[in-house]
Length: 502
Image 1: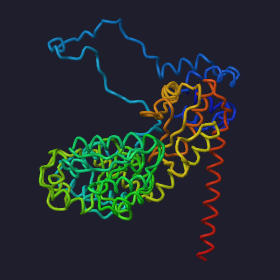
Image 2: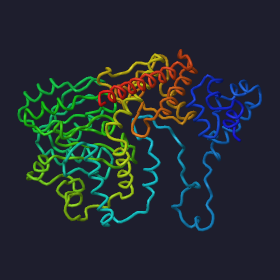
Image 3: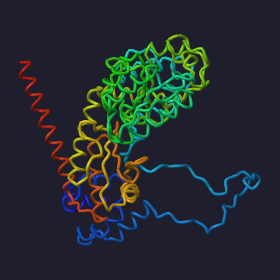
Image 4: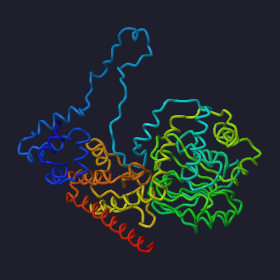
């Protein structure tokens, strides 16, 4: 029996352990799940148990589970190969063993934790990319993606590559040399859109907004009036670097009023907040598998309207990428007989199929609501610690929470401690926000109450140790109160609906 299990045995339950040590139950549950108590709690455990569990026992067990990494040999000493390895000068200089990653709680900007069903599906036997069974699965996958995107676009499929490939796919196909493109930038990923326009030979016209603010529709309107020859508008719906959400519907209405096509980045929004392609009239969109879809990284779901397909077909020049040429991929992902284009990542596509199926089973609206519910609880806890959000409340993304780091706190050291002692990952700021914010992700399978409570408990503990005034338990209590309040409101709403139906 390890120290965590002995604690539970001594006090009778995880809840009682948490009450005695003035911790949240999620933290104690994490100890039991990990199989050891972190070394930093050794003295508290000895004191709380009146010596029945000694500090040395906690320290020795923690070191055995997670030993301090030391150099195994002096500098300059190399691994001496034996047998046939001596004959090969290219053999590694050190012994390499199978890789086994640690179990992390992922609450950063991505990737997210992957649902066990998705992991299991990904490990299924490989089959050929033109196998009739695989082709049938591809059609189901496209149907599930249309549901996630809320569209009837026939050309809706996952590009083989991360979200950055999906972005480049849109720009390389739609932007011919000399095409003027209005790009809205309010964070890191709007800047990457500009880079894509330039590399495709287009002419970017940049609409700037402050990082942490949404894209201003009036600025877009003004830019289009000044540039009547602009053919495309590009913007990020959910800016991952700041946690700000822009009004996609209004931006698209402004763009279409000036007869331009629209490219929308939905990397962080798809599955976590409403993305309504047909209702909004989105022309081209790209996302990523490792965010709110909670799948393995390496796939980028895209969708194109018939208007975009005709636009690309009408180009007189050759698309400046063979792999991402839409005209070639139409033969592989189109509704007709498949033609070979590239070796598709079959097992990753199995995983995406299962991840989308989970969203369909939960219900898309429920998926959005779940992210929002845990956002409200996390926000209550963070604000009880005195932390403030970067983004104004009405523009905050529920699945990407950016908060300002307190004065006098080494934000990088906090993240490092959370990772090393609690196996908890949160994100840092990018660009001008580097060192100034933390980014807490509540995406897909990571959006669970136990993750919220572990995050608040661990963060409060680390910040308290670093001298920040945090009253242990306040953040967790605030989050619990938020959950209770939402539960009560939902119960009243259901009761009212039943009375109305009767």
